Length: 235
Image (cartoon, rainbow, N blue to C red; front, side):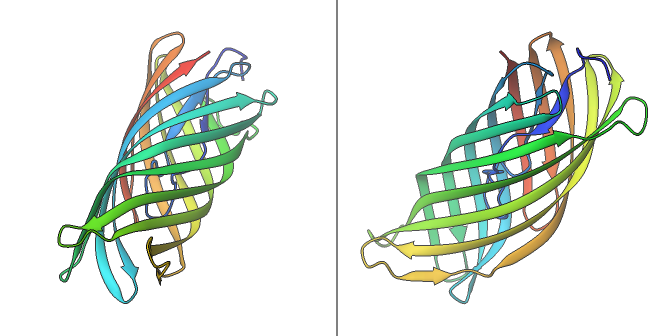
């Protein structure tokens, strides 16, 4: 592998990723790109959709988030990354109630390693990370505020293939274990969600229109479906 070729790595999450939110939402499986010896800063917008069971009720979850991720190359093959973000829109709906909100906070950390090259023009990366998301929500018929919380541990394996020097396609899978809960802020009452483990495939395209800028579009399937757009800047 040449030293000037960009490496794909998982920016921390999640966030999400998270099993239910955008922090890996963003999150969920958002990938960024980095050079061998350069840190990277990524700005991400993402949309996640899933079904969640909380306190005996099944909710349809839709969440949008904006995420800022930074990554630093510890060596030519090892990267450390961290992320912070805001769930700008959260909607939990069931036949009996609807909870909405537009504030909160998410964060995550991860470590990623570029694996030895097996096939020409194909690079493989493995990553592991932790993420947490807190979204503030309330019902339209009540002033009672609640916090929808998601925590997740995940591992990811991704392969990227260079199509032309400025364009690459990638695909991978992630295994994640998460937990969600809904807490009433005033009383501290908690509705626990199911403990979840899942396998989620994802795929994306990366284009480098300029030397230090990469644009990434990504989608993921499985329990949580995520669509994201990323602008990555090599510093």
